Amino acid sequence: MVNILSEGSSVVNQFIAELRDAEIQKDSLRFRLNLERLGEIFAYEISKTLEYEEKEVATQLGSALVPVLKDYPVLVSVMRAGLPFHSGFLKVFDRSESGFISAYRRPHKDFSLTLQAGYSSIPVLDGHVLILSDTLVATGSSMLMAYRELQGHGKPRHVHVATILTSQEGLDKIRRHLPGDNITYWVGVIDEELTAQSFIVPGLGDAGDLAYGRIG
Image (cartoon, rainbow, N blue to C red; front, side, top):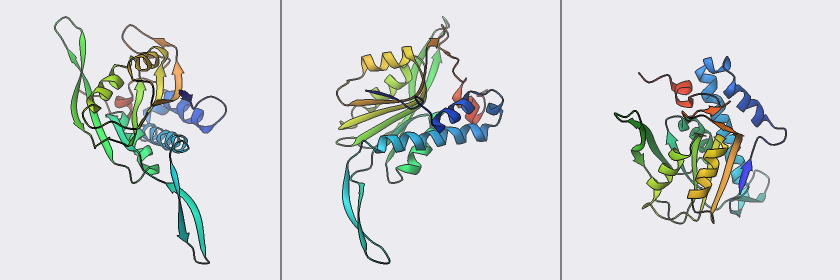
């Protein structure tokens, strides 16, 4: 199942518009803030699918039965562009355990590139709901690599894959290669074009550079 949050009228479209805007992108603080805001919205939408249990809460005048989260999901994000997006999720799921996977492109003499995992730190996933997030999905290779890195850390009972912006090609690729029975996809917006250099058009540019500066 694919949920597209930009469909219909909501503030999601405002935040995505600002992420795309080349003038607003000059303010890296606002760029990171919009990634974080969207993380909070994604978390809220995903929270509607989770399990709850009633808890009695004492007030100053009596008591109330309130449905609260039965278990907090495990949050795993792809660095570095995924960090502000992850921060938004963590503001909502403030008791969640977090995992991080870094990815980089290794150049070869024939000018081809190989995607490789670098640092990873992953909690036990067995029996938990997992939210795997990355800011952008272009070709889908980074998301698939991240998912492979999770193998061996337990089998989650359900996986939510979240990305703010994806190409149609990248989304189709991860849906083909990930086991589909227990995976739900959450997407901000889908762009149709992916160039030969793996740039999403119109896209928004390099999210990591826009959030944290260019790497020399």
